[in-house]
Length: 271
Image (cartoon, rainbow, N blue to C red; front, side, top):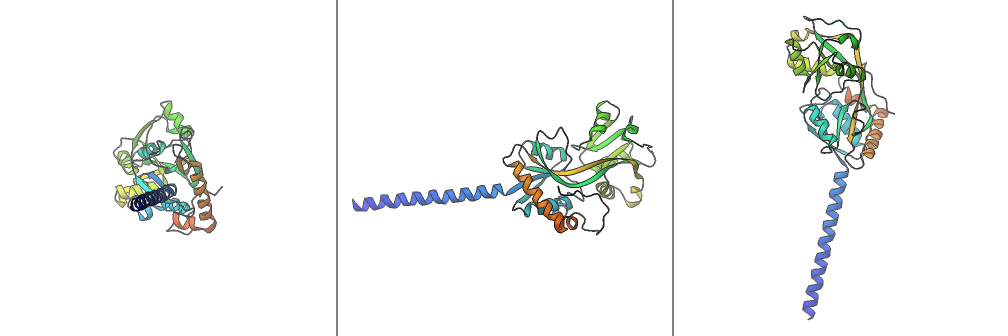
């Protein structure tokens, strides 16, 4: 009887210890999940690229801002529209490099802007385009990265049928369409366009493309967090705190503009 009682006691102790270990491991796993953010993005060099150091300069800012707040970042690369939809559905926690628009607000928390720059409109010099305003683009065909926002004025021109839009996953593909005359104009960020042209054409060929001088659209590029995930607002708040620290220390400029001391760009200020 005594032996049987001892065995029963030891069995109970073993069960309790196993339960305790399971609980500790579960809590540890939960903590790791809470402090890891999965970010879906697309190719947009030099800011985002699967083959670049730190996945691109914008990605390095995002990674470091989260890191300062104890959050680890994991990146996944997809076509941009797919990255947006996977984040919207909550399959990925966040995405980055997006403008704030009314049609996106129901689905995402918008963090503070990482970058503020202008989208330019490029044409082929053998088919020159003269325009002083977006309205002057009426009757033309426009190439845009799939998933990119147009802005309210341009969106209205497209909705009314005054401008026809064609989509591709990358600016390289859009410039190739422009080169053979399938579209009249390409909308793109100046730095990203320069990288795309250098990738798609040899040096002399890149001179065949120019940007309209007086027609641009100003965008702020943000990290967006899915409203499908828990604590999305808190995740944005943590990112914003980290981003402010980067601005305060000057690390923001060193990460985003590694090749220049004075880049002359319009940067987002911490709010």
